[in-house]
Length: 125
Figure 1: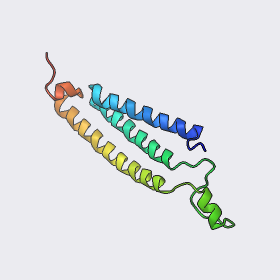
Figure 2 (figure 1 turned 45 degrees about the vertical axis):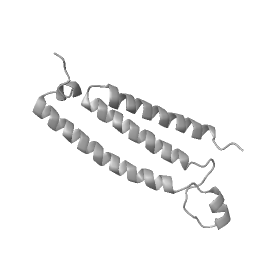
Figure 3 (figure 1 turned 45 degrees about the horizontal axis):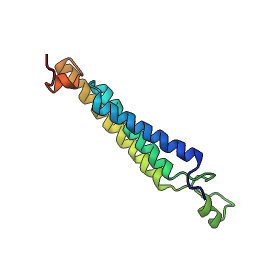
């Protein structure tokens, strides 16, 4: 029995790509805004990974409708826990993104630059 469908495999690869691009941006790019965007990519990659774990090919929304038997519903519904976790993660991610952008605005107003090397004093000029 094949546990990974083509859609699920594609979603796993896409989530891995998001995480790798986000890690590259957060570690190697010098601009603070680009680092923040990289962190957002990591978050979205993790969210996609969690949703992919709960994916069920041909599954139905986990809401019992009239006419469904409990056995059929249990066998065919998608797993609802990853959906709840990702919904919570999206709310937390939006809040932390707003805080990071506010801090970046304050840094720019105070120092006139968003270069991490200049802000940390690593610039050898």
